[in-house]
Image (cartoon, rainbow, N blue to C red):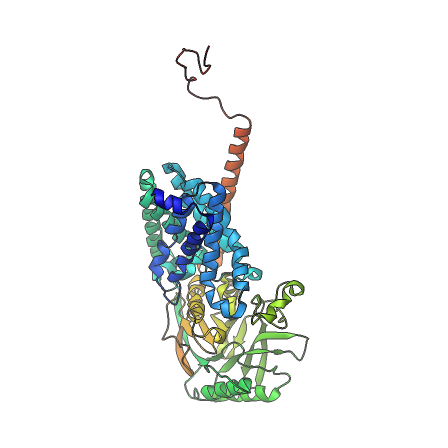
Length: 524
């Protein structure tokens, strides 16, 4: 043990170990998808921070672990962002510094059962605050939220319908804290075991109590995935391929056809010939076609990414402009300072225009659909608002062609399962190059994924469900609860600091006597 402590005495070695420990949870996400690992993945990081010789060092352990976590979860961005991925991880990793300090504050040394019990509330609450802050789209959005690793676990999806991905993150961190206490703090094993039992009981209660989506109809939706189209005139070739695949869907009694993000590379106002060709496809298939236009608009300045619904007579007038843009990919924050990013990576040469409001569209056959574009599917509030506004189906249009061969396509496709479970609405995730996927109103997968090697069109039988999930009704209540826990902690710490400054209460035991018999006054 002394050898380990001596080896960790080096700040650089300790920071490197913390970064590796922080990176471990990535194995719980797709593509590895070791969902069970999420419940112990934080234990090495927690044990390292609790052993820190000081609060400052524990904060550095939190910062270093946050750096490792962010690099691991976003490693597929390295070809696009280059050095920026490390700069961003250094800046955002500091969000975990207070969390590292809290780990030592509650679990350092020989913690009492009371401190360990408090840790089971405070540490998950602190983690949720980190996820809340970094979920702001200007900081990269909520990609890699710990709860999202449970996208294929049926009990977890039921919990998501009650408290969203936030509740899953809270419970995962609580289980990790309990596991760390069980491993190294013998005196506090009772509250740790009680926490695990309470988590299991709560999960079982939610499984039995939470309202289940009531299926009251079905629709047939086709996903068109053209696959990789490279070379000269790739925009035209992609459109031709999408047209060819869509035409094969004729006679299959469809309710809607969905194309992926950037499936149309020209504004339809400038290219009415393309609008006529898509309208002809709508007539042939008997269904409206939802395309995604990535082009400079003819009716206003700037380039926009827009979901556009086209019926048998042409564009229906329903249009949604993407609201939450990808930093560096679709705009450069503080371009006057960071514009040089275009010279070292694949950053946006021109900022995309930004939409102002979400839209629920009325597709043919009376179907109400709520479109989301690209990484907007990572934001639980956006899908929740669409459900509140009456969307019967959530539709995500994406393009991860830049990241073929990485874990990004699988990670992105998995997010739709959480959004479906949270809202009680089925969700279609349609991409240009895979992975495309469809999920039922409980988050269950419908049919096969369309992988990154597929160029095809597939029809899915999608169940419709109505009613309101607790998460849609009550919103991000786990976050509000975490804020209350941390506010109570701040009030307690402030009162404690004030009491110590004033000298604190008089001791409840008489002062010790010296060998001369005088109370704590040597020599008297």
